[in-house]
Image 1 (tube, rainbow, N blue to C red):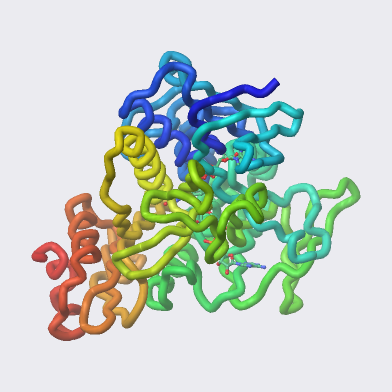
Image 2 (image 1 turned 60 degrees about the vertical axis):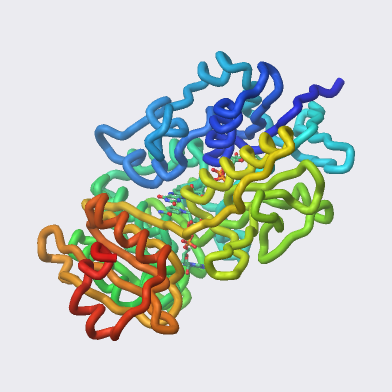
Length: 433
Ligand code: FDA
Ligand code: NAD
């Protein structure tokens, strides 16, 4: 027999936690809302997993970082859901969705019916086996998305302290995990195909600071090539990484971060797609009535740039979830809400570094500040300038006020007199806007 809920959130990650809180804030009756998640724990702040979670000492553990602590909100422990009549259906993978009949089916044949569905299935890691990399199924090769992956990785790291780690990929996961691995006293080498790290956002000038900082911490960096194959010992555990350029690296552990792919297969052919995600409007409605999509899976309108984007970052996951729920509740009252007006915001932290970026990384770059990583507390930043306006702003080691200032600049997109004047005024330009 099917179990019916008025609202179902499919997925139990960041967006789900923030959506649940917004449903609670706007008033729901006991038994109306369910979260269905294949994870075994209540929604949590996923960014924690690639940072202090892997530290050898003092590492945070649940229930410390359940949503919504990441944005300074209430920590929603499992009891909170129970007390508020919100059903947390965990360890439950949905394998079939019928959006016309409004049903979801789990891997053990449980059927759920909904009136309104919020798709919040997020993304999963791209695997090296997806590219057919030889030997990539070996033991000791780790990926990271969910808390179970983090626990497995934590154990793997603990077993190999003092050994050699190879990190494949120079994006967010690669850089954040390389830091955690060397803090765990492993000998770390990062490999990536591009000429510099974090190529989705960084320019050569910005990347140079981080690469030199990492090298100074003892991390070796190999650029311009990829892992083409792996060899294993008699027990099937990885012991060698073969690079495409012919070099070979011995390895006791390999950590891979070569990008993510949104989990939208369940809905193929049922919802419109755009740019690799589920197409939604400014309220996160999909092409199917009563079905919303939020977080990593959604391709949404970005009026600030007259564009459509899919964004794989936590700030958007939180805000899109809130927007969708506010629209659902307002519609029930015959009311409307403002369109989603998003300012892209990305950040990362490793060692004692912490950067923030707001806006769009398009146009020419103007860099300012101290970019010598050997100078203690070096602070530097950058503006992206297009058609005489600031489009994006980046800051390493900013104070909360300074970070607010760069966010404001990116949002207001003020005109710039000249690149030289901007470079000379540096952070003052943002703080005086
Ligand atoms: P999210 O991945 O959080 O949740 C999806 C949920 O759906 C999961 O619980 C999953 O198990 C579940 N699910 C999927 N398919 C299902 C199915 N068929 N049945 C049942 N359940 C299903 N961003 C940032 O801005 N700053 C940062 O520092 C970080 N750090 C970071 C670290 C790590 C390790 C990762 C993996 C990602 C980040 N991010 C980040 C990105 C950020 O965490 C990400 O954008 C959000 O978690 C997206 O939220 P969603 O709710 O969309 O997906
Ligand atoms: P990413 O897209 O940030 O970086 C992938 C990296 O792998 C790139 O440098 C890419 O060129 C490289 N690469 C691609 N193919 C390769 C290959 N065959 N061999 C070696 N390198 C290769 O993706 P990610 O770091 O895997 O992160 C996964 C997801 O988690 C993303 O959605 C990301 O936004 C999210 N995340 C975000 C943060 C943050 O915002 N601070 C932190 C961790 C994870």
